[in-house]
Image (cartoon, rainbow, N blue to C red; front, side, top):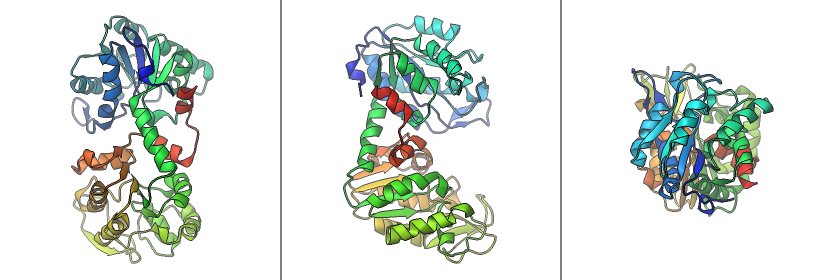
Length: 400
């Protein structure tokens, strides 16, 4: 891949496709960013271009506004945070009309000087960003490409989407991969290839179906696969245990049986869980054996014995990939499992990778130092698809 170091960007306009899809608290008068990890991860590439005199036009999506303007999904709060992190003004090209790359954006971009930066409003305000109609998407891509002379792809979290800003714009401009994309690729190639052993994968989250592809791809390569979160209950059901009112994918039970047969003792399940009658911060809880969940009660976290078991299997690991929380970490009664596993991984030597999304949010929410991990991915679903061996259209566009 071409890198930003290969581009002669001084005095040139550069469209940077970043991933600024941050969570927002909309309970007040003004939306507030609750986790700025993706904004911070985007800064190095933007700053490197600005320091070389580029005129940078940042673009991103946020949420799913369905191809029409929606103030709840405006990138305006992100413009303010980006300006703070860069230490320089960020011109925000958002007029609320959904004409993301139209007249107002063109005027603001034309007024940029060397080392100055603008942020377009939510790309998904325009139907052309996600349209399956090639002509509609192409027309929007023409608009975006018309704003600049170079394109830099730095939104690894979006490279699995065949969207206009991800695939069609780099077809129209000289292009390069940003620093974030290159770092994500470096780490993921290690995880998918010849990772140092012992190699342990920790998977959580809600559904087996969401992680099935990565389980099948990595199971032959790992020394242990530790399973927590809501997805563990389908595995427990596959072992013949009742799971009470816990999350269960009944249609995946036979698949889990096959995986348990293939993985043997390399697949490690919780031995105890924290149960409650409801998902609530003040719900009475109890710790029960994983094979003795009472009818009607929900498993909402792994228990202390499971944390100790997982810590034992992680001890001495040279490579760890963790994707998905162990429980409903947002609520204090169900956060101990995720905290215990995260702190164990943070204390390891070797390559420790947090797989984006809820896991990254858990690290920050629980106050664990990000620097304790080798890499915190912004990739989410894109990371999983890469590890499954799928071709990601956004990466393919940058490689041509």
